[in-house]
Length: 583
Ligand SMILES: NC(=O)C1=CN([C@@H]2O[C@H](COP(=O)(O)OP(=O)(O)OC[C@H]3O[C@@H](n4cnc5c(N)ncnc54)[C@H](OP(=O)(O)O)[C@@H]3O)[C@@H](O)[C@H]2O)C=CC1
Ligand SMILES: O=C1O[C@H](COP(=O)(O)O)[C@@H](O)[C@H](O)[C@H]1O
Image (cartoon, rainbow, N blue to C red; front, side):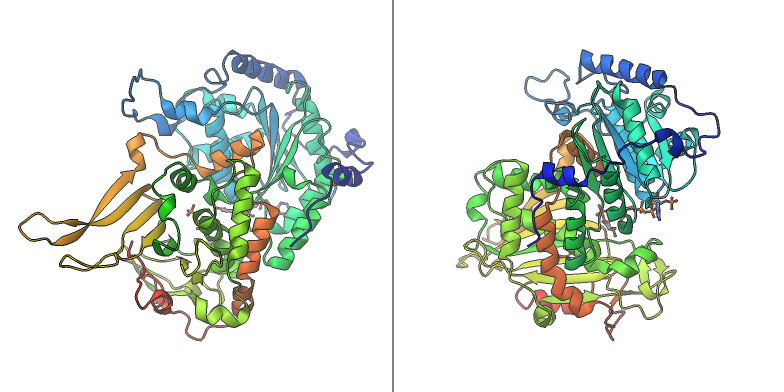
């Protein structure tokens, strides 16, 4: 176990340097050459308008108050319905974030462009970001504020993730954007960020709340965390300060622990929000809702009734030009250690004492701890790796992994993994959990399937099929229950049928996970963010697999054809009496 941060105040105090906001004028770089000096008053005016609008009604009259793409469809009538959209009310929750600045490090990167800026825009347009809000993009490229505003607006127009833009809202959103740049290993760039917070102070009601989002290569997580600490920006005396860290969190157990330790020299754990975007998916949250919001499932959710559980995250896409990252990561780091382990933990955990961050995360940690270890010597019997070869997808020929641009011709990097987890606790003893994920599989689908035991005795003709409760995480989001039914006719012949709940019954398109998680972080709700000990246990579980596979060439690679369901050995792993679901 890694050590927990001791007193946050003590840590932060110790790390607060005397250089805090030192000599701002002297450190101002030659920048913003396009005459983009921002008069404080302009910002104050905009913010004051925002504040007034928000004060009128946090729920309605926000800056861009409008309708999200998701609300273009009219929801079905609700009992006593009056046209009021229940989803909108739900999204708003019962409070809005305090005035704050969102600082995005790596604002010129792919994630920021395609996902983060659209997510923030959507939240803002829906009036969910509170009374005063602004964004400071931070990068290494020299850019003026105006150039960054242009860049961000282009990104919003181009991203598929952007909600329908209401007239005039892009121009209003533009007003909220600022940019700073510099070398992330020095002090100057953090000083500039600090001054952005100073400037927003008045408009933010005298507070300097800040959410620092690290959307950079992982090698920069520690330098940025430390840089913010050196300049006193983790100190919460003038407003809350939170650090959002993208994945991957470390590349193995040792580096994840080192990163946690480095971060905790500056930040208390309560200030740290490690992103796993799967937790922001509506359907993943619904897993908890269905398990713990109904009486009928939980009694069956154990070794008495469940035969096994299958968790699948299959992707039809290949590398998509990410060789630089993926050659270093591979599927275990990219998907198994984080997203699939989280899905597993939510499926297998006990009911939390309350729906709050620590209660839920405590339960996830407990079940992760209960998983039988997979030391290097066990890997062969419980895990299968694969790498895709050339094949055909949707009638088109696609290259194998080793033929992708910038991949080594004999790359040992796995693009598929299947693993059997055994949980040594009273609930799950003897119930295997099979997890699989891979690229260039036949289709994009993520599903958690709870497969029940066969009936104890067959009194009707026909097979004794296993009932399956399947959570379709994506796409075609919903939940289905497969069971046997009599087919119409004179004979008592059974056939499998499916009862299906589909999310589109709600008449709302689902929220981007990044919107959900960004808003949660702004609200200080860490429920959907993995805690330090969760990440640590997930790394512990995959460590043996990484040790056995890292850099070790699998002579059989490539061992599955693009467009198929992975290597044959995966069928042996789950068999002989069980079969992977054909999705
Ligand atoms: N892209 C995605 O879909 C996903 C990304 N992530 C994670 O998000 C993070 C960002 O990913 P992504 O946006 O794809 O990465 P990119 O490489 O596209 O962008 C990274 C950002 O960091 C900046 N940067 C890179 N190196 C330096 C440096 N040495 N000094 C200062 N700035 C630097 C880049 O600047 P410049 O523009 O000048 O290169 C850019 O702004 C990563 O941790 C990734 O693992 C997680 C899930 C999905
Ligand atoms: O984090 C990642 O996730 C995506 C899959 O995410 P999804 O939400 O589209 O299911 C994966 O393609 C990528 O390799 C990985 O880094």
